Length: 248
Image 1 (cartoon, rainbow, N blue to C red):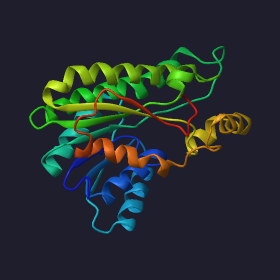
Image 2: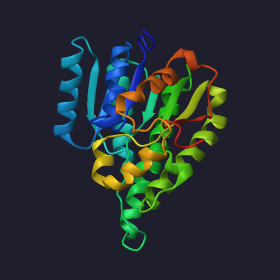
Image 3: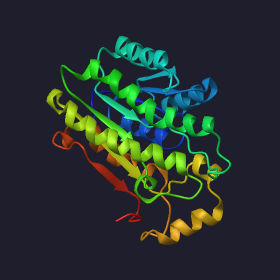
Image 4: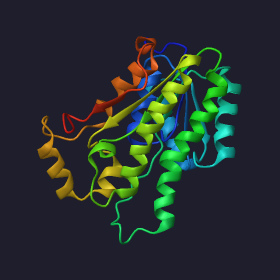
């Protein structure tokens, strides 16, 4: 198995892309920590994973990645449970759809705090546990980081910042054999996308995609497995589009 014995923290892993990543990591032999801010969703996600994989090693921790104390607890408890941390997947994020005129300061800042500052805080904490033996940090970006989208100013800005963090952190942490990469999905048919994008927008983007459809969350997981595995030991600082050809 490609991730045999590796320990991974996956933020934003109670649904959508994060949950599919979690299942794929367990399938490939990883020990995982899932986290989110909703206790019920965490419980359900853990049940889904363990029902599908009876021998799964899954730790679930309630944590808000924008809260420094929660982030510290997430890493301390994972290290206490497994004795190491090899992979961090910064996947937690929100994507409210709101026009510039309607969006408040607080709403804009909340998106940045979760999507960008949360990624910074988790990455900063991960260094302590990866410095000695190296590791892999995988950030979830988006096609809107390059392409933009109406009523998505905060989300687009937060994901453009993720690209900058990815490249800067890759250059800074390479000396510790810590790889930092980002996955930039296109339209993915998650509940978050369905809730925040109207059908007309989704149909328009699907028509612009050479493969003619949006992705299902499971379409993305192979790339996350590759970036977490030893197959990617010489891959760092990359923003990899996985969008059906939408951006090229």
